[in-house]
Length: 111
Image (cartoon, rainbow, N blue to C red):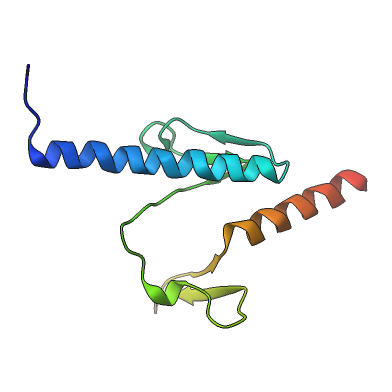
């Protein structure tokens, strides 16, 4: 039996943690009555994204530490940010985003 090196073991656990996050997000999306699928460990197998919610593809990134400035402060709903020469992105709580998606889809279905 081949013994794994320390770096090989670390890589396996990181993949496991990423897969755990993917499953967690899919379960949360389904709680909001959204159609959601785990795309089998994401980018390695599917070029479009890690998970699918409704008709959109989403990436999942799990890190041991995330920069504090990415978290909303005070009564903020989210944080808009960008690189000097990059595109703008926004960081929001997942419940807020999924609720907005669910409300928008319900409104589209009613019209």
